[in-house]
Length: 66
Image 1: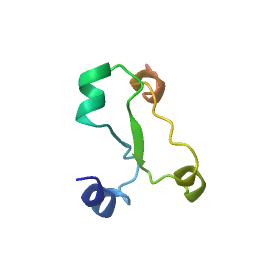
Image 2: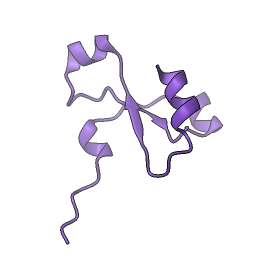
Image 3: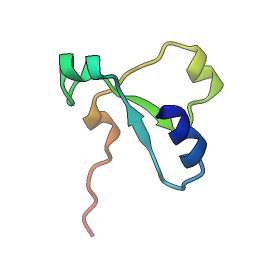
Image 4: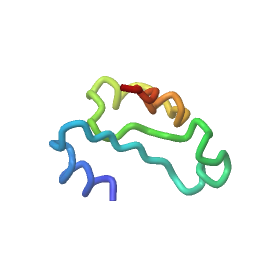
């Protein structure tokens, strides 16, 4: 699924795709530090360095009221 999403969706402006595994989701729940950013594609340096999983609330920008 990830390869298909990266192939088809990397050029969609503003799209951000985060993924995790079923094992991590079951163990830590959706609020745990289990999420990996996949789109936009990480730089080659990021891919080669340690992969850092994040908490969902660290990823979602605060709601802006107009």
